[in-house]
Each structure stands twice: as C-alpha cells, then as structure tokens.
Image 1 (cartoon, rainbow, N blue to C red):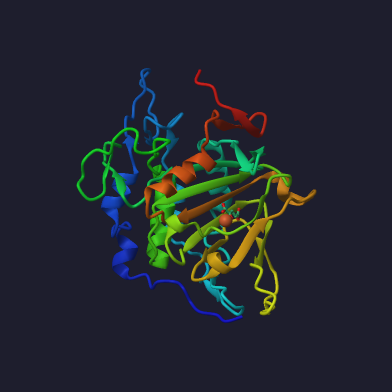
Image 2: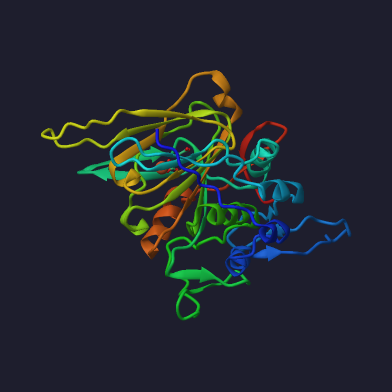
Length: 330
Ligand SMILES: O=C(O)CCC(=O)C(=O)O
Ligand SMILES: [Fe+2]
C-alpha cells in the first residue's frame, strides 16, 4: 500500500488564530439565531436556526471546537494500490479525546428523516424504504445563502424564485459547517453539501452504489466521516467487460469512530461501496456517517433533498428511550 502524508503543516500563526481563510463562507453557512436569553431570562446556548429547520441546532460546544481544531489526529494514508482506486484514509481524523462526545452531540441535536420513495421499473412501481436515518444541508454552486438565511443567485446576488428548488434548501448549521471548514483546510477540497446518515442498528445499511452523479462533476472528491459504532465499509470494482477481466480485489475497511476516508479520482466512477447489515456486535450502539460533497448544479440540490429529507416528518433522538422518535412541535 502506497503511503503519502496528507497533513498540512500548522504554522504558529494558524495555531493562534481561529481558522479564518473561508470566514465569509462559514458565516453564510451559519444562519445563527444568537439570542442568548429566553423569555424566563435563562441563558440559552447559541444555535443555528432557519425557517426550514424543524428546530434549532446548537453550536458545537466550545470544548469540542477547541479539540477539533487539532484534527486530523492522524496523517492521511493514501490507498491507491489497485486500478482506479484513490483513497486517503485518516485513522482517525477526529481526535480520540472528543470522538464520542461529537457522536453523542450530533445524534442528540440534529433532526433526521426516514425517507421512502417510489421507483418505477417498466410498469411496476415499488416503494423503497431507505434503511437508515438521513438528513442533508447545503445548496449547489449556482446559489448561496446570505447571512440572513435568504437564498440568492451565486453570481447576481438576486433572490432565487421560491419555486426554483423542489424542496427549500437548508443552510449548513454551525456544528457541521465547522467540521466541513476544518476538513477543507486539511485537504484543499471545497464542498457545499453535508449529508448525514444515522445507522441505528446492524439492520440499517446502504447497498452497493457509487456517488458519481453528473451533478458532482468529473472525479468528485468526497470526504466521509465515521462516528460511533464500528461498521465495515466494503468496496469492489464495478464490473468490467468480459474481454478485460478485472484484476482488482474487493476491500473491507473496518471504519472506527473518528475515521475519515477521502474518496477521489476515479474511485466513484469505477468502484462501488456499501455498509452491509450486521448481526450483533457493536452496530446496535448506532453509527453516524457524514459525507461532504460538492454539487455543481440545481439537479444535485433537488436530488439530495428528495432522497435525504423527503416529504415525511422529522425524527429526534430521545435520550430516555435511547432511540429516534418522530418529532412533534410541542
Ligand atoms: O456510511 C458510510 O460510511 C457510507 C455512506 C455512503 O456511502 C453514502 O451516503 O453515500
Ligand atoms: Fe456513498
């Protein structure tokens, strides 16, 4: 396995100043409701809020923010010893001293969806129930959010028509925006979407697929974070024509809490990946996966909200029951 270092040198300046190179972008991601006092004068923690959110999402606790600033904890290891494969594997990316707290925080504070949709093959229509919880934030390159949370054209700055997107895009909350910002600084990539999966048990999964939709452009770089239960990440090369039998072998990466894999180059166009179902083991403790992606055109935004938010109600983690429960505004 070839190995290269993927850790940017941290200068004295960067150490003492907060990450600032993309400040304007982060501010636009953060439609923050900074009100710090509730009606009964109890202080409230700062949170991100937006008309599209079912409830506000607290900012990352300061303690987590400070530890995360030292990520990646390990140098990235390049895995490119098979045809068309180009991965950088950080084992881990999120420092061990905060990976559990970050998992618990996100599971507790984000809203999720259990999406179902119809597919039509010929005359037969089938309902697909996505076997995991999902949520998504962001908008494609053609639009951006103002600091007030309004969606405007990326070039003209003019408000985009209300019906331009099938589902109204949601700004990235500060807690996920800050992880994205750190990963952008560490990898040199830029992303405009954060997709989150929650695998509640070993029965939740994602089947073999590739993230190579046209709206991501050619050879997209996608960062994928794991938090919580360890789950196997399987990879196999896409079928090759019979005349050219593939010389590749399938891979299994046992992704642990805090790990990150950066998939790039031809990885999406030529390989498939999956998280198969698991019986027993630690899978039932729950796992969060966060992917960072960059959609170039409107179709990407429509696709991501359709498959990761859908049209059903939101779920929120119930600490007492220790499971996701339908969220009601009471
Ligand atoms: O959960 C994972 O590690 C993979 C998720 C994934 O492949 C996806 O959301 O496209
Ligand atoms: Fe994927």
